[in-house]
Image (cartoon, rainbow, N blue to C red):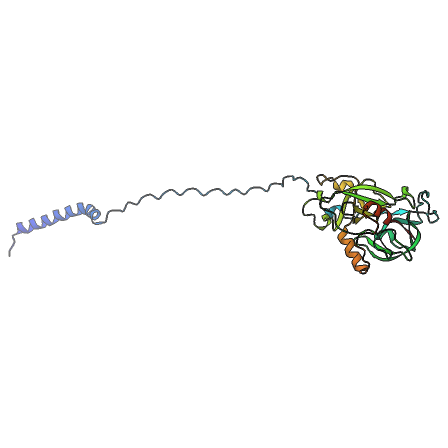
Length: 314
């Protein structure tokens, strides 16, 4: 196949124009060849992170002072102070007041017919010799046979004595509040005991006080007349006719101010019947001293006959 010069020239010009046109549309073609751009949704806005606020420490708010615990009230232990007496004082009802520096005295009571007397341990501490006396008992020597200082209990033996009465030991009757107490403060004289009524206050102690609030362990009573010389004296429940404790010491009324309803003066304490009975059984297991007395049904008369003045000579 032959082409003329004119035809070749036309082909060349056609290819040239075609190339120019192709060159002109090449960018558009290129765009057409490339895939369409993917339109992506704008990401959801991220919520701002919460600001962490570190609170400043706040001072503790003032709280009402709690009621004093029983351990606080009894620490240190109330100091028992027995009477001080004169060794030459005659054993008369109207004996002169004791003179300091010669001896000590307190109260005790018969717990058995074989002459066992119970008192407070501090009443007969470091005695060179001891004696008892009462309106029903002549002045008689006594021997300290055992002392227990933790609960402040002691036993004496009176030889060749005939107890006019004995007191049984037992827990308070249900609902008992009124108590009867005998003692020998300085104003009473050697033979003349003083007697007073008291109120059992254990129920007013705060909950959770533990054994010190249990009247079998410790008796809390209100009686403003109780003072030195009552130490070791019987605390009698007249309804039950038994000794429910012995006088040990008095408690500062300021320590009672935080206990609702508790009197703030005239508070005395002492070991309860559980401690007294346990000590008696341990030291004198054959005494048979926890039975009723033979002197009739009047518990106050029995208490008066059984109670004695305990004298300790140093």
